[in-house]
Image (spheres, rainbow, N blue to C red):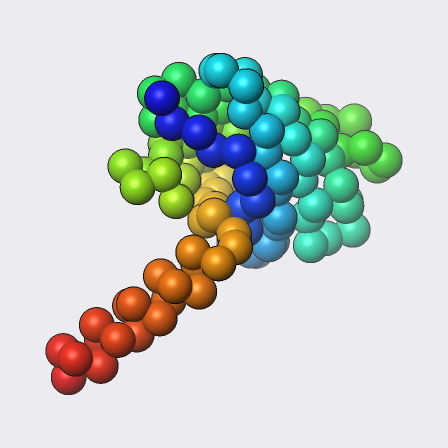
Length: 121
């Protein structure tokens, strides 16, 4: 079973504008809880959802400003370090999102990719 617990750095796109976010996820069995801090004026949100196989779904609710809930669905990569999918608000607005695991492995992955690119040239 996939475990997506931990810190993730991501981006969602709304009407062509990218917004970065940091998510802290806690998975217990198939259940998912956590918080998201958007790099926007909306700020912090709480989430609840589930992970089934490599499918991820959750509902995001902002703590202070907006009363709208945002539904996220996505797929986790086989390496369990990247996920991407779609989000929507009451069928009136939607877009895509993606996230990568945060932490030391991101630096190691970047260094490996840079080394590979240099060796290919």
